[in-house]
Amino acid sequence: DRRNQAFMEEAAKIGLETCPFRDGFFITIPCEDPVFVANALKQDHLFAVPLQGGLRFAPCAVSEEKCRKAPAMIKKYL
Image 1: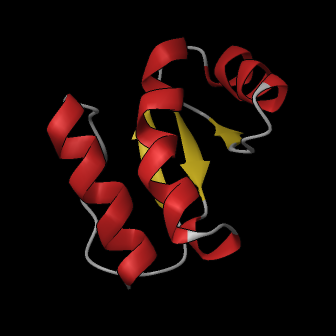
Image 2 (image 1 turned 30 degrees about the vertical axis):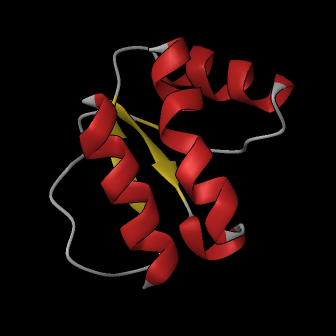
């Protein structure tokens, strides 16, 4: 829960749009070119799964600190 909250707080601060989220293992970020963004994020050692129309990020798979950094990293490539 802390990792999810850390991601969502940082996303809100920088204006990163996310799909509605209450709880769970994944956060979805709307994206026009998810394959490009996922591949670009790999270069920064952040891994997201490209979906049709978005990216899936798993806060459950990384530290709370990385969850705070991830929204800015994602937004950089959007």
